Amino acid sequence: MYSVRGALSRIYAAAPRSLLFSSYLGQQGEEKLLQVACSAARRRWCGSSGVRPAARNNSWESRPLRSIGTSTRGQQENGTFYEFRTYIIQPRKVADFLKLTNDNIHLRTAHSELIGYWSVEIGCLNEVFHVWKYDSYKHRSAVREALANDKDWQQNYISKMLPMLRDQTSEIVYMVPWAELNQSPKKGIYELVSYQMVPGGPVVWGKAFQKAVSAHSHVGYCALIGVFHSEFGHLNKVHSLWWHEDADQRAAGRRRAHEDVRVVAAVRDSATYLVSQTNKLLRPTPYSPLK
Image 1 (cartoon, rainbow, N blue to C red):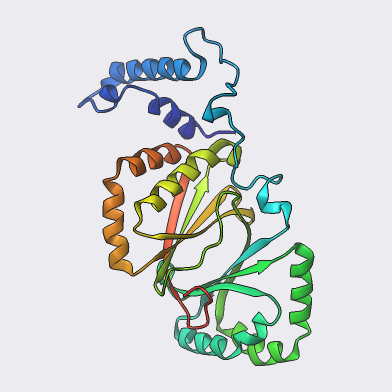
Image 2 (cartoon, rainbow, N blue to C red; image 1 turned 90 degrees about the vertical axis):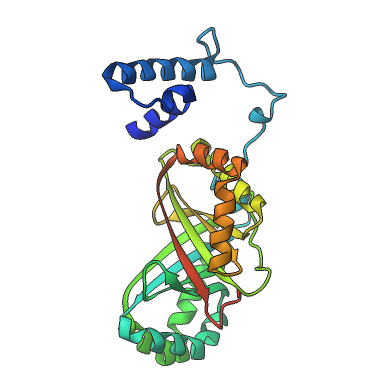
């Protein structure tokens, strides 16, 4: 079910911009705005007859949508998924934790593939974020069992690492069908942007979100590493992972994006379905495959 705020946002988005930018409205003005917005939205969706027309097979709008996170398209066909792990470390133990992990990560990567391992530079401090790839849930279960029985891993790492932690979270995500997992062009920093979308799933907001991500990518100030849709954890959540040469290059690129009409239009449409948004700046560790 849609939220009232989301529904009103979509109604107001259909109103003439001359009304939206008037210097004052007042109660009568607001009522008039709502009437006009509803009328415009009705014309947009139903036409002058008031009846929504059948889908047009010759229009790009009627083509099959490669929506984010659908269970019948690319993300689940081969069973591959990714696990996002986030650890919050005791402030005085961060350096010890990173060294311990650096010395023993080979014991962990012997069991499954590590995609990337980062420390959070800006965001929640004293935090590390890592991504692991699995072929299936059976594969993950087998890996977890093997790790539990790996005496070197348990004695040399787990027993020493756990007392350093304050919190752990795990999230299962799939790569969206229209994105690929890419390598970074060269060494740099990363940005993980997380979007909480309205309930209803990608059939509601998938197309608009794809356009917004693609618009940012086409500006060229950053490289898209991957786009992921949550399966376990906070549902209706999407993550985009970006590479930047450095933080200053990101800032300059953001300024260009804000002046690009294609980006502004795509983001405005996607924001209609957005509940909240967070981001964090990530610095790759020496043992991260993504540098």
